[in-house]
Length: 156
Ligand code: 9QG
Image (cartoon, rainbow, N blue to C red; front, side, top):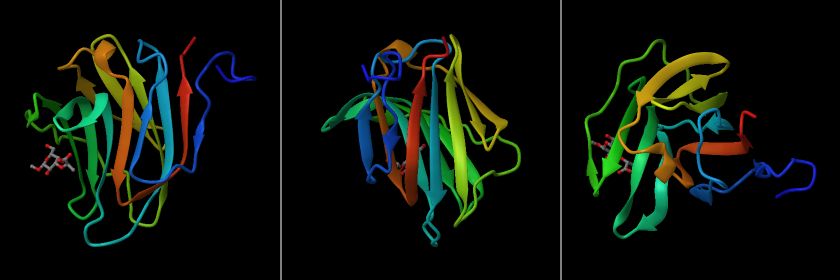
């Protein structure tokens, strides 16, 4: 609990990258995670935001949603890692909303059957659950990105 936040998780401000941290209380329908960041320019400009089932690296924790903007390619790959194996990639989306050297804000909303991700105030993609969202307890961010703030909102 954090005084002034009604028991909600305190915002994470200017964390270093790679970032790995607990999602206090896990995920429930209506819960929103808001991430404000900046895309670091470069030929290999890519980053990812993972909703993970733990923080283990050896063996790798399952990843309920890997959200991976690849800025040169102009595609955001979404996938799931289960038993250390990637599943099928989801790559369909509307206009690519990230740009090198630009700030962004993304919101991940948990729904009973899917995650919904909005970027810069517009709905962007849906990702149907392949791993039960109840197993997710860790947020991991890595790559060519700076993070200004991460906010957690129960939606209540
Ligand atoms: O490339 O694609 C998503 O389907 C892989 C990447 C992998 C993921 C994956 O190598 O990279 O983006 O966690 C990882 O291993 C990330 C960084 C077929």
